[in-house]
Length: 216
Image (cartoon, rainbow, N blue to C red; front, side, top):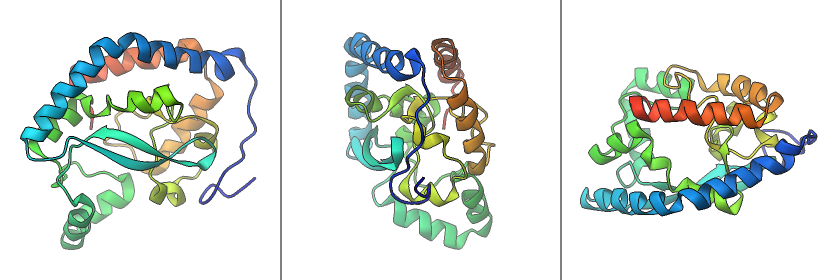
């Protein structure tokens, strides 16, 4: 098997009707049926982002199934040139550097715009990823999409057997408190237990996260 830190990763595919056929069918049907509601919402949020002074959408590289890279669509929640700002901020704040190295997130991230903070809290910035679900890059439920730069931090291989998900076990956990290295455990457990019931439970749990506003 190829190294999980670079290039393509060949993970043996498990059997199962839902795993190999039903899951993809659920993704397509759900995206098509919800489109009439979701598309106007995305346009409304995009207008709010534009009024906040940012271009509303951006594409970002993520690692997909088998280790291939795809372009993920999101509503913009950060200021322009956010990567440079992050490095400058981390250089000035050693404690923030430790937090970033551990979780790959910052609880007080200076790059996030006021509108972006609201979108993240309600997880509405994720809605455009339904396009990625429709074209097959992602699934409604799966591992949290990983950036290429994070591959060396990921200790498992279950991620590479799955399409990344808009939601999933890690996404509905106390995710601000979980170290990045723990993601592999969530992914392994989910990959072993994929079923329609599991996915429906996670989708319901996601609804609770959105209502409670605990996203980030």
